[in-house]
Image (tube, rainbow, N blue to C red; front, side, top):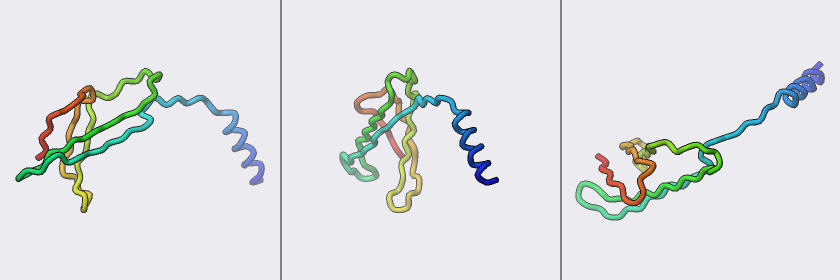
Length: 95
C-alpha cells in the first residue's frame, strides 16, 4: 500500500506541474567604510550594488531601507531610507 501512495504522489507531482518565473533581485552586495570620526559621531560611506535580470521588466522599489545595528549585541540602533535612484553622495544623519 505504501508503494501505491508513493507512485501516486510521484505521478501527481509530474502531471500537475507548471512553469514558474521569478522576477526579482538575483543578488547584491553592501559594504561600508568609515571616513572619519568626530566627537559625537562618525562619517561612513555605504555602497550598495544590486543585480537583477534586466529582461524581467520589473522596476526597483523607489526606496531602500537599510538597518544599522550594534556590532556586539546585534541590537538595532536605527534605520535609514535611501532613494534607489540616487547616485553619488547622499546626505544622511543617524541619531
